[in-house]
Length: 271
Image: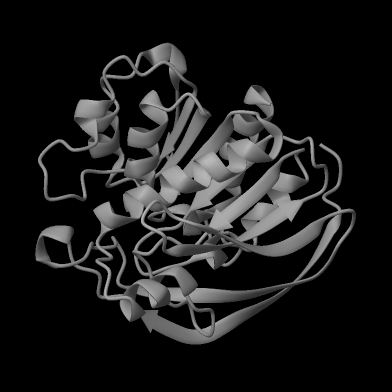
């Protein structure tokens, strides 16, 4: 693989952020880890790549904030959706690496999320201001809208990437949406009030899907994905305990290389 042509200045924060995320049944979802060290990532220079702040209205009119990472306007697009309590900066390190593989990335702020150190979830803030609900299920419309927005850029089906609750919604959305051609799901699960909300949508699933999780979550993820034919599934189980969600790819995570090598191989295979 060619050398990654970007420069990242990474300041690993010494601040430990407490995420008390409860399940949606109790008013919000629960992360697998409660104490998360957030890396503050600043992209000073990325050769040949533009990083742009964008926004577009969700189906109910709420403006969705996002960052677009682009080298080639004709490149296939990956829509990236964060986990509970987080925002688009969950992908600040990862998106440039994906761009270097020949993709464009759009990392969104869903309305169900929160702040990461000094980085605000702007969509969540707007939802609160407008007194709109912001449970996990309320973010489904944001993900669908982001898919439609990305598809309209170059009229190509997108890859939909989700983390934790958003990984479940990515599977549900991607299962039947013709504008999604593949799914990447980090720690998907049934994080919703309605029983089997994700699983019941996966019958007849016929698209490439990358699945990963922590060691502890792997059995549940495998069960969730049972309706998907083996020929479409790529499953990565980490050595050791692993990390919940797409933050497994952060450079301050001891297992990040294994996760990255696995998802990189998948992205190159389906390109």
